[in-house]
Structure formats: structure tokens, C-alpha cells
Length: 77
Length: 255
Image 1 (spheres, rainbow over the protein chains, first blue to last red):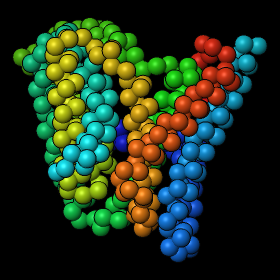
Image 2 (image 1 turned 180 degrees about the horizontal axis):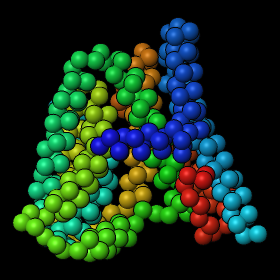
Image 3 (image 1 turned 120 degrees about the horizontal axis):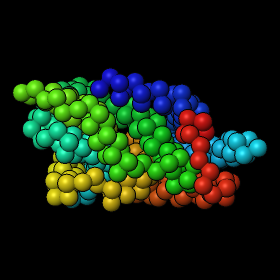
Image 4 (image 1 turned 90 degrees about the vertical axis):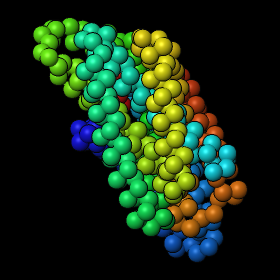
């Protein structure tokens, strides 16, 4: 059981570290908006978080694709 | 419990748990076929009981002791982190960058390993017991996490998530018994893709609720959030396919 938790944590923070850091940053920004923006801030916080996470997913995968392409091209050379 | 609540909380837990049960069933099947059924079945029951204790103590304690908004915030953040990981892997698999999870290959590998270990059986086959126990416990821990995560909204949600997970277990095990071979026809990557999107959606929904936001239509906005995740992930799959030459494979940890 501890091995599963450990491997999940390692996977989350090391293999997918940039995604995890990006997500934590998005959560922190959402929290800041909700607490500093009053009622209006609270009402939009969920949508802001959703948009930030969607952009994060696409950006992270785009970066993964570019990295993979570079590795494939260098392996073919 | 009304049907909408049941559907919202039991279905995601059912689908997410089914993926984990397929992996555990594959290993138990391999042990049973090569070494006989008694020890792996006892191992499976022992692991199930261990998990029941974990869920009963941890899950109920979390839901009853920790304040609801705090629990939703923490679980929402965790769901988002884990969901993003599942979604990313599923997208990379669909795009052909990472190899698709192959139950048949896992089954054959497990069979070969067990045959190498030989059939020196004592009165009780401890190897068969331990392999089955470990597999069910490891995959089951993920099921426990899924149940606790989807049940974080409160007692009703926890019951519905538990029902969903138990139903998934019974369904997958019945399928395994009926077929007596690895469940290769289960579209695992599709399920992981859907579950990743659902985990992320519940994460966003609960985290915002914990901050005091009221979603329009309450839980009815969850399907919309799921759709948004599915759409952007599908966009990412197409983008990756366009970026990479066909058949190019890279280790997940390298991208």
C-alpha cells in the first residue's frame, strides 16, 4: 500500500512535476481571487480555475509533444 | 437517495474502480490458472477485508470529523492533481506517444514469471496467496482513494461511491469468471480518459465550492465541466498526432 502511495507521489511530483506545479499554482490563484475579490470573486473563481486548468493541460501536452518530437528526431539521426 | 444523486456519485466511482479491478483480476487470473485457485482466492478475500477496514476507518473518519468545506477543498485539490495525471497519460497513449496498456501482455508476462518460479507447492501456496493479495491490495488502494474522493461530499455521496465501487468489482469479477481469460476487450484507455476528465471535473467543482462559489444548477454543471475537459483533451490528442510522426514512441517519463 505504501509503495502505491509512494510511486503515485513520485509520479505526480517528478514525472508529471510541471503539470502538478501548474495545477497547484492555478489552485493558489483561484483561492486568492475568491478571498480578495469579495462575492464577485467567489462567483467566478470556479470558472477561472476551469479555464486555467484547461489551458494548462493543452500547454503541457503541447510541450510534451515538442519534447517527444525532438527525441524522435535525435534518435533517427 | 434520489436517482440523480446516485448517478452523479456512483457512476464515476463505478467506472474509475472498474479500471483498477480489471488490472487486479488479470493478475489473480494468471495466478489461478498457473498455480490453482485456492491460494489466490484466499489472498483476494484477505486483501478485500484489509481494504474494507481502511475505507471504513479512514473514509468515515474523514467524512464525519473534518469540516465539509475543508474536506472538499483538500479532496478537490487532490482529485485535480490525480485526474490531470490520468488524463495526461491517456492523451499521450491515444496520440501514440506512450504504449497502450495491454492486459494480454501483462497476463502472459505474469504467467511466464510464475512458471519460472516453479510449482514447488507446500501445503499452502504462499506465493500464489501473496501475489494475489499484493495485486488486489495495491489496485484496491486506488479504489479506496476513488471511493473516499468521490464520497467526500458527505454520507450519501460516500454510500453511493461505495455502491459504485462494489458494483464495479462484482461486474469485473463476474466477467473474469465467465471468460477465464484477461479482460482485453475492456477499452481501458477510453475508461482512463473518461475517468481522468471526471476526476479533474470533480476537483474543480469541489475546490470552487469549498471557496464558497455556487455553481449554476449545482451538481448539474459537472457534466458541462466534464465536456470541457474531454473537448480540450481531444484537441490535445489531435495536436500531438499532428506534431509527431506515426509510430514514434517515447517513454512517458521522458516527455
